[in-house]
Length: 323
Image (tube, rainbow, N blue to C red; front, side):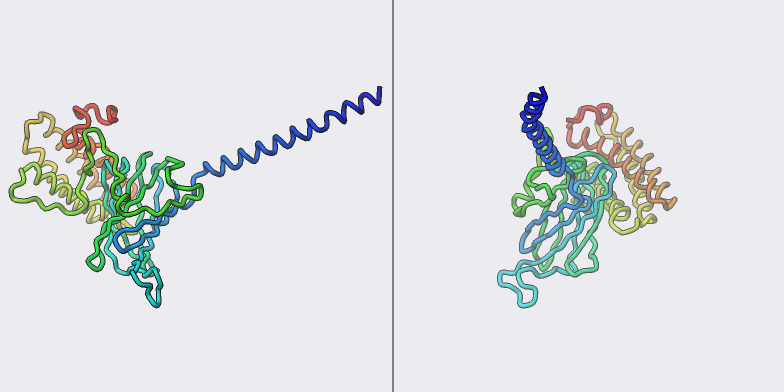
């Protein structure tokens, strides 16, 4: 009997060993999968535009909604012949850059930020905070030595993994021509941002309503720059821009086009802008940003989706019936 029990135990040993090895392999696979799916702490993107190369460092690599995204940009000129000092990459100093951040991967609502030079030569930076889960498109616009540039890259918020990005967060070099064409259209072929990227100047032939909208767009950009472009918001400028926008919104509401709800929308936006001006007058960033997001996310977007882009039929359907 003892011999039989011993024999049975010996026969079972290979199975036990095999089972233990299987579990180890399974754990290794699970760990690799977890590691591959983990969002990178830092993400790097390399882009070319004109004669310039941009090495962009994003921290965090994939932010969550409401999380501040820090963008560090190393800008260099790639000369046709290597420079005797810098070689194939010459740091570009004193570049004037504006970053345009648009949700819906370039088809939605645009915010403009001034990009600031940092300590090292050819290094610039800015930061922004996204309000919702989406893929944002960032375009770096500027001009240096009569050479215009506008490279772009994506910032997924709350979305991972993303196409063309490896597990370490590195994105492949994106040619300028493809970087500027990655703009999916909303229904009806809509690709226009909600606001202009800089102060608007309407022509003499432009309709009064269009002039009013252009004026508000320019003031909105001024407000964004005052609130987000610097290390600290310029609250007096934010307050002044919000008050000017409130006045312009009431003026636009008074134009009374054929739309029966236009006047009401303008007045509602003016009330929200008044709250924004009041928050800015208090000098505290958090309530001011909250009031700003309320104006942009609720009032500006609602009007644009209904009146300008005609994605939804009436204001009551916003945002529930958005595609």
